[in-house]
Image 1: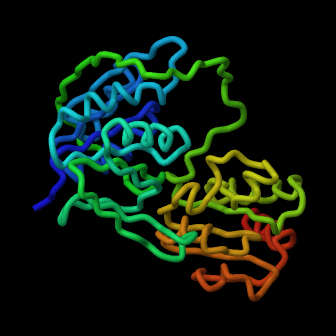
Image 2: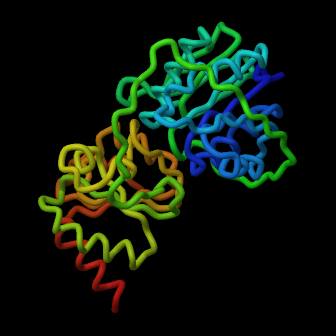
Length: 310
């Protein structure tokens, strides 16, 4: 018998509701969503199995993390065996920490699986992806952040109840000085069936043009290793594949010029087929790949584009 009696999904982006609510519905029957935003967007949760939608209407000058006392007040009243799920992005982790502190509950980040057979427990990678650990809570509640792609979005429409909750102000508020719209494209590579990953085998940003042509030819999204997103800043962080980035579960991952460090490969371990191209025959990526080609990506990729276009 599962120890999970109540599952709460806490979110500020409607785009993450599908997978998180679907995952919650597979863990417990009593699925609640605490949504910071308008009711119209939050109602999307009912399409994936949410039973109760708790709405916290947005307040001017109040950032997402400052709703933590309000969320904690909602969750605390549920009773024992309570699991709280949040997305494992920066805002989700910050919110998880605040909720955990307010509730006196343990917090586990970047979880890859959750269970309740022997108490509330969460599985996550440790030692840079070299091993997995299972954290078991001795408290009545557990707060976890879930990496993108861990749960699959499954439609399970239900008739749900909407409750508008009261805002509980934080003891010490964070003042919002300025907000700016996000620039550049926004990708959801976790939902893609095919993903091409690029790494430091590409010396210049201009060298990625053939990769874009290849992606268009095979119907793939483009992802990258951490240095490409954070050091070179050629792509947004939402395209970074790895243990602290996006987890992929699609059909094909084509790793181009990626060495294959464990932190990166942990993000593609659930992909059905991994294909690697690297000029270093001893690159670690070949130990994980189903198919490998030793070669210069700057020659291999244009050749593939020509072959597919012929």
